[in-house]
Amino acid sequence: MKSKPVPPDLPAKPSFKQRMLAAREEAIVAAVNRLLAERGYDAMTVDDVAAEVGVAKPQLYRHFPSKEHLAAAAMVRVMEDAKAFTAQIDPKLAPVEQLKLITRWMLERKLAGTMPNLPSQNSKLRNTLLSDPQFVADMMQLGDSLGELILAAQRKKTLHPKLPAELVLYTLYARACDPVVEFMQISGQYKDAEILDWVMQTCFEGISV
Image (cartoon, rainbow, N blue to C red):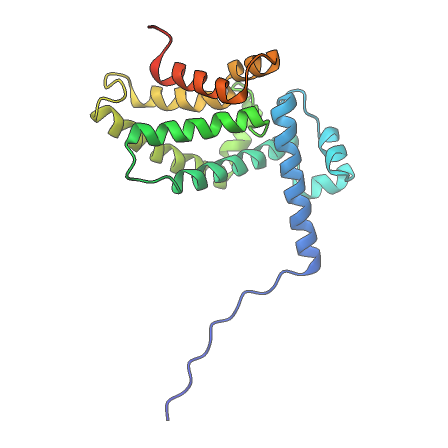
């Protein structure tokens, strides 16, 4: 007589406390994202984050032990969002068109105030980011995906073939913290769609006639 197959163990359903902690952590990361976009890393304080979420600092530190870890969590979220957006792009599109879509997505987040603004020179923050395995894995995966698109576009000569691919990659990454976007938006003279089109044009076509 054949024995019946044993069904696999189902994952345990999160407890109410676990769900509450996860929801609080989600709210903290969202608040950090907004504050980093609005004020930048140097101006944001842990007190600001606690006040934004409506929790005491000791509760905040139960989730994230430092300001650097708060920023790292926000960057992990951005990387996850970028990976998700990149994954849903039609792979049949020309490589340069895929790069344009990804760049426009970054600029749209910048205009919407949801792109964290981090300093490029801060050793403590950099070390925290590079010690976060999720951030490093996401950064490498995204960088590899964009790098392949850049090389493919260079082979097709829709991007300058003599430029180092690494330089092109960093140029595209720089659009995520491009102050031109904010300056144009703050002036109040232009619509977001116009700003997007102009910055995309200068990024991919330059400013010469």
